[in-house]
Length: 293
Image (cartoon, rainbow, N blue to C red):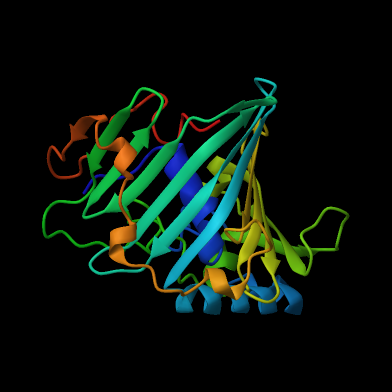
């Protein structure tokens, strides 16, 4: 099994794919952190109610198809970017399927029509870009190998579904923020600070979730890195650009929908098969995770 170490796929779990699941946690990691099981009494009834609804929504989710705007405020380099696209996700056996498409990018006010696709199916992650007409095909699992993609510590590409409220509270200080100007309508705003000593505290200073009260899924996620140098914001909506509704969730999506488009068929393909037990992808230095702004 190839383990993902790139920041963007972690962002996938803590950003884009969070639109279809509960809050992200490393359920088993407590080394050097605060003791598990000793924090639930500190959570308010409102926090517990929102977490219970998130847990139920993540457990019952089978598919999602929605639009996404993924923006980054890079304070170190003084740049702002926004990528516009769509997400498709489907629970499937033996592994889930997902396809993320970005069809335009706004970089400091300059609009670029370069397209990007990120596809996972059949043990492989496909990264395709119209700029350079290149596809990188990375093997993440050996033939016949099975793994729990919903275990955030052990999955090669972590999927943040099926987490319990206790796992969230074991890993975060969580509070509900009062409504503010600019909040998405009819949402509960969870402000989450990773507990000292866990992996999340080394990656993030804060994570914020705006949870819609009708679909009980995040419609906006804010993530500030541990150094306070970069803030990522993911906004999720229906394909038509309206607020996320139940029509975006649990609709039938055929497996055939999870494929790269015909325009990529002439792209050059670079393949990275697994090399052996415990294989990890090389540092791409701008690959999936580092070439996101």
